[in-house]
Image (cartoon, rainbow, N blue to C red; front, side, top):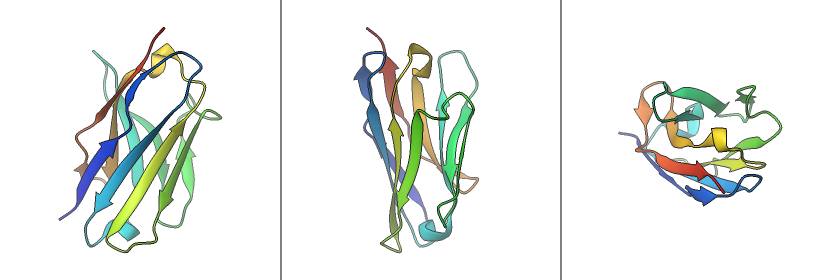
Length: 115
């Protein structure tokens, strides 16, 4: 059983920063590819960034150079996955979801970028 719990969302002004965290627990989390996705109101959920178990990363073009995904694999059955978001824009406003492998999802955390 895998459980993903996100935290760190909130309201931030344009140009500001936020750091999202995802606590991933379960027997297989250390070997899972992990990712962040987001869903804005009225839009489909979209890919933001992924990180493999060995640390390889991939980003959506819209966030390259502004967002950084990382993970802490030091514990076998509890991994932390982070999304550092800098230079935030109003169009980054969305519910951000942590994803593990292809089928595990967290409950989401709201990020609102507004002045």
